[in-house]
Length: 298
Image 1: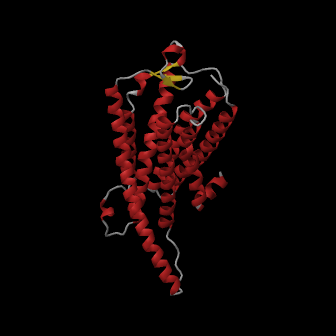
Image 2: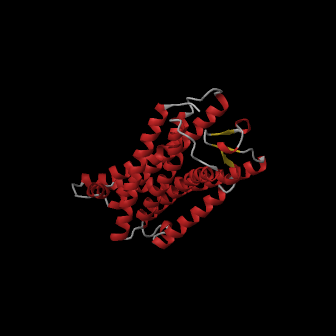
Image 3: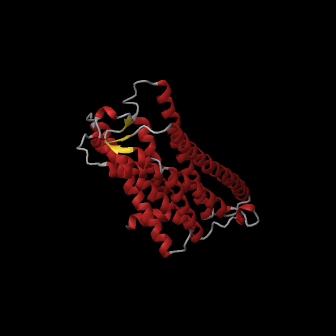
């Protein structure tokens, strides 16, 4: 294993900063959900923060330990848990972000619109959907525990691919393609829902903007409703998510097919994988004035 203190320091800072930010978001929104009006959006944001924490700890900490060349402390069971949680948390991030966009679109939609017919406005509905997301992503990643082992358990010559502490055993191409297709379908369905809800919110915000311009010309006082300000924050989160998701996909494909020796450049997709989990809590803290007060109070 090669000592890489620069990579280790960057991963350590990103993981620590992102984890603290997401813990603040989780605690603040759970406090708001329990002590104020029980808004489903607060529960979804708390779940997104919790998912980000799992992703940062399961992906960022092993990378940090690997870069500093610490002694391997992961056995087979630990490797299975870490990699399984990393894959599951990625799927949960996609599903939760999509649900967040859809619920926010329903919240700001007019009463007579078709969106209002969807029954996603109570905490019970949201909890049921979040539970479904966990089951779905556990099932989509269920092949991983059978093909992951610690590097301590085999001869170094048996390793085909993996990180320095855990590796993946060769698996059947049929199994590989089945689970790859399932992941692609999941991403396509939830990103499609995210895109549709985001487009709808953009159209509503555009109409609101035209209304504000009209009222300003008429010299009438008008304040933006908190639901619309929340919609703007959610759209900013979705843009952040889509940027990191597709940048990671394109750069990873480019490195795979066009660059032979990318040992150093491989850091780029590794950092992009954590980007959304690190930045998203600070977008929420900056955009939500009430949340900022909560964080200062805590």
